[in-house]
Image 1 (tube, rainbow, N blue to C red):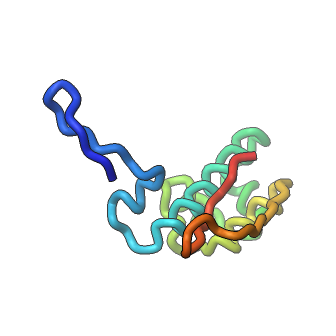
Image 2 (tube, rainbow, N blue to C red):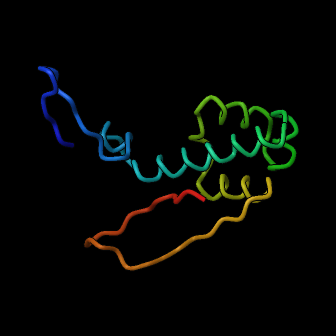
Length: 111
């Protein structure tokens, strides 16, 4: 993370992954899960779904949808979140390509 001064204030430029900037384990997975939950929220909003209606469509309980809406998705895997999106009418495309660095990265590309 780069640091520089702006008008005497120390400014830190983020890496693009707030979880990595905070030093959290599994930062890439957390970023992907967050992106998937953002898309689930958008889908629910655009379809005018209640949490109960969304839960039924996604095959999860309403309390899990409530947790998701509050940002707690630790009890849901990336795979389950992808399943939720497909049940809400979204296609998910996984693209694999050689990495530019020695170790590859996971990312969620916008539609």
